[in-house]
Amino acid sequence: MKPVIAMDIGGTVSRAALISGTDIHWRAQRSTPARAGPEAMLETMDELLREAPAAAAADAAVGVAIAGQVAEGRVSAHNPALLPGWTDYPLQARLARRWGRVVRVCNDARAAAWAEYRHGAGRGCDEFLFVTVSTGVGAGLVLGGRLHQARNGMDAELGETLLPDGRTLENLASGTALNGLARAAGRADARALFDAADAGDAAAEALLAAGIAQLARKLGDLAVLLGIARTALGGGVGLRPGYLERLQRALDGLPALYRQELRRAELGGDAGLVGAAELARC
Image 1 (cartoon, rainbow, N blue to C red):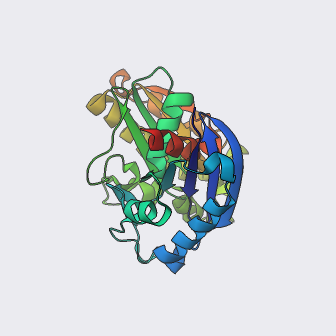
Image 2 (image 1 turned 135 degrees about the vertical axis):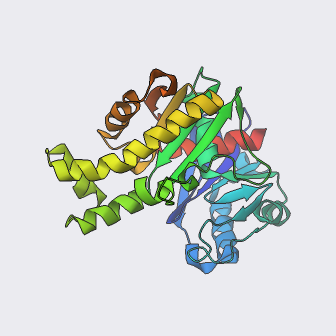
């Protein structure tokens, strides 16, 4: 299989790899200049590309996974105040002209979903959902064995869905939200909140349960709306020991019609890279 260069552009770290299938032959990373705007990001990506092994990567296609709304290769940040300049930015076209290569840009959670479907926890399940609970809440959908990608880029923004009180799911269930709840309760951060709950602290457990219960209801809705049969959990919070078990209990509390199989994501931090490489080959 011809190798592909994959890049995963995160909020703090940007990574690159040369990938054949799921085999990673080379890696590099740089700090992400998130607040410096798109031009600074392009320079960082140039640096990563220059480090790739010249012989293997000479004419390789490039797949780029990036956070935010991605519509036909154009990227918009969900919060432009935190990522200035990323409003309908034509990243795919700019990179293709800059590098003279085939370039495919996709949302990072969608890339991870495709990787998990092809090579990880989603294998054999054609109605599959990948959910990442980390700094935010993201997702990717596979329907009928195909990655669902809407023309406007708003195809699996689970974290942006509304709760009955008008907040978004991300405002309640993300790592950022849990950090805020933890500090308000006198804990250092979300990790300390989980530690306290694991040690039997009922108040800490109740704070965790609120967001988990709402996530379970969203999964239940997707089970009946789209026929989702399996969900894989990823992200720093989602892969925390005990998180999946808590979510499973919340899901088991719903009527059988709304339940589905839950699994831990299998590809870890490489899912975005592997998915970006797979999509660059399409």
